[in-house]
Image 1: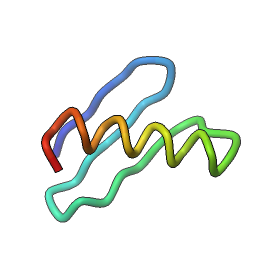
Image 2: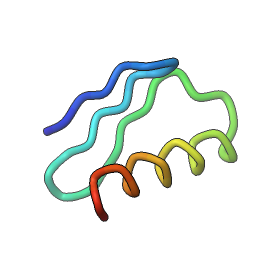
Image 3: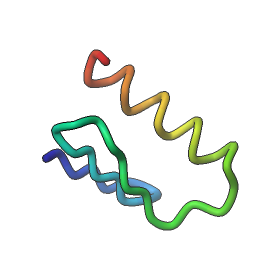
Image 4: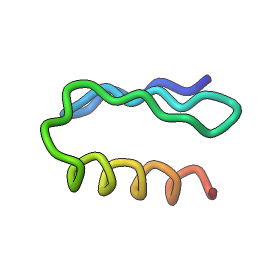
Length: 42
């Protein structure tokens, strides 16, 4: 499990699921997820 705290808190679980808080729109969630997956090489 990886936890990243910046503007929001992102938790990446071993199976690839991400928990984000707080995120207000789907577009923001998609952008954060894409950035996180790119950063960890997925």
